[in-house]
Image (tube, rainbow, N blue to C red; front, side):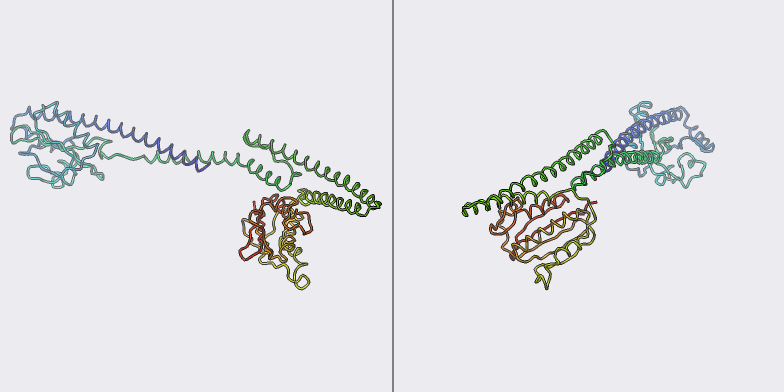
Amino acid sequence: MLLLTLLAVLLAQSLSSIIWLSQLRASQLEGLVTSARSLAHSMAASVSYFRSLPLAYRPLVLDQLRSMGGTRFFVSLNDKPLGMQVLEPTPRKSAVIEAVADVLGGQLGEQIDISVAFVSPDELRIFNSGLKLDELPRSWAHYALTLEPVNPPVLVTQIRLAPGEWLYIASLMPEPYTSLEEQGLPAQQVWFIVLTSGFLLLFIGLLVHWQSRPLKRLARAARDLSLGEVAHQPPMEGGGSEVVEVARALNAMRERISRYLTERSQLFSAISHDLRTPITRLRLRAELLEDEALQVKFNRDLDELDLLVKGALQCVKDTDIHENIERVDLNHLLDCLVEPYLAPLGNGRVTVAGSSRAPYPGKPLALRRCVGNLIDNALKYGEKAHLLIEDNAQAFVLHVDDEGPGVPEQRLEKVFEPHFRLAGQQQGYGLGLGIARNIAHSHGGEVTLRNLREGGLRVTLVLPRGQ
């Protein structure tokens, strides 16, 4: 959310800055053209003044203007237009030249010869002899044509008054258009954008933190709920209205789940009590039967019924989530499970490679049943169990490899179903793998099966290490 907000702020500020800068440049260009027209009117007045003077008086007036100094223009009379290297045209320079030429043409007549160009101060030529600006007395032209340290371009206008007589007028553009360069964003505007964006992101960050804190509490409560921690304090209701509504729904769900678990425990306790009594009574009555064949049939049916009841009760008991979360030492848990099978007493039926790096927060008895079922299953169907432990910051992974025939590919998922067994002659309820997977799911993990290429089955238990 912060990254998207930052992107939106940058796009909005960039767009507004572009619009503002374009409007600023348009207004500056309009002011520049207006100043150029005003300057052109002054030039036209100067030209009209010199035209009105007798030929003999014109050089005297120019000498007086140079002696006085501080004039707006540098003016001279030349025999021909002076050739100078003009500056490259830009939109602003072209607009000024066009405005000056239009005004002079309108004031002095369209037939008059006019040359308007911008020249660098270093390339400026003054008289017929082509003198540079630095070669003149400072009082003559420096004050009118230089502006140190900027040295802006000089607008040079040459107007033909008569054959062999050209009026030379050089001047600078008035402030603030002296440099004629398009300016970028002012430093004040840049700082304004930076500060407003910073404050906006700060407040949005605080808002996101304020809204995400109850969401984190809800996530923690939901994770604890998936691990069976229904007896803990329900999460506080806070944040926005939507978050409050989710918290209320989660609290209601916790209460329903807690009530359901209590009722389920009571239900199966009642079933255990109610079924065992008639089964025992039926066994006693079967012993009184005189027909041995019928007695065998009765006992077989009672054994099957007793097996089903015990399997159902064991399934509920082994997947029961009424257990507190503790920090489980997985190394100690594995040592206790594999100790009876190690050499010499166990003939080395179980081998262990690797170790756990840190305790795991989980339900100790449930994890013991889960791992124990995997080891027992490997020993029952594969004779040996080879345990490989891979542990890192993301998950604890336990591989249990056996040396049995494996499982057909089409039945790798079916073996997790209750009461399903590939080997019908083996004793058991067909619940071991299903119980192990249910316990793994309650811890946010998974149990998967894979046939090894060299033979045997690999059962992998993955327990994620969450926050």
